[in-house]
Image 1 (cartoon, rainbow, N blue to C red):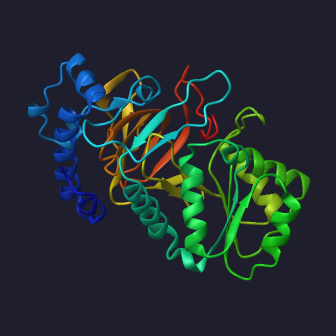
Image 2 (cartoon, one colour; image 1 turned 90 degrees about the horizontal axis):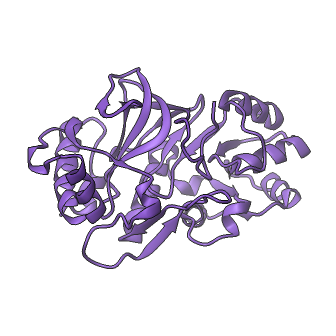
Image 3 (tube, rainbow, N blue to C red; image 1 turned 45 degrees about the vertical axis):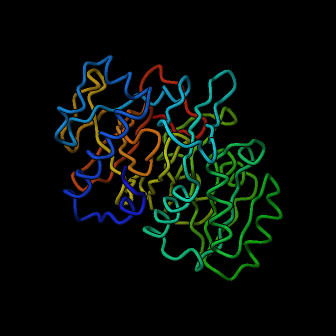
Length: 323
């Protein structure tokens, strides 16, 4: 079994090490994770014959709704659940080690934003704070502590803006989409020294509009040049970040590939539009190879754009906006 420290020591300029680690983790999970093992058998995949990263089969992410996607062995330390909208079945992700999750989100944040101590983090996450099992709330809580300033806000926009105005540090305003839109419409506050970061999530509260149009609304209201985004989900341990333009980049232990929407076993070349497959090596005790229901493009440098959802796919509670 691969140690998590080996995963977080990977470098973005060493694709060979990433591939070797991915293949080792695949062989472990193909044997130890019952739903993945059964899936591989059903599609006729023989783990011993998988010799390249591009040959690894990806598990449909919907199985996190109906199966315990978890390797045989020690009991998990936590179970994270998705924020499914009314009438939809939530996913559940058993987390073997909260320490691994913390290494993943701290490592990803530091990769793109540096030392958390230089920031204040203000989390506008009303619907997530009202339920248990949110990996996003867990992450935000620990990052707020790392920052040493900021806090959680339900829907008290006056208190949020008052506290942010009194804060001299550079700030990150992390919010679900519908709450940021409400704040923009009701107050249109001109924010200074602030990164506005959306993490998806209209959840039926607001209409779905194209991401580009949504970001324009927020930029004009808040007086900022770009809207940042966090791409994560309950089924993942890691996060990708966009620092504007809806183009996401991954930490070194995470990789996104593009597949043919009509043939889920066929990967597409860089620049093609298709379904997004995610390799998250920090998913060390569940499944690191996930076939999502998101559609987008992946460039040769590994960055990717999310354009929407595959037709007839359930809309994830914290989904990126459908185009």
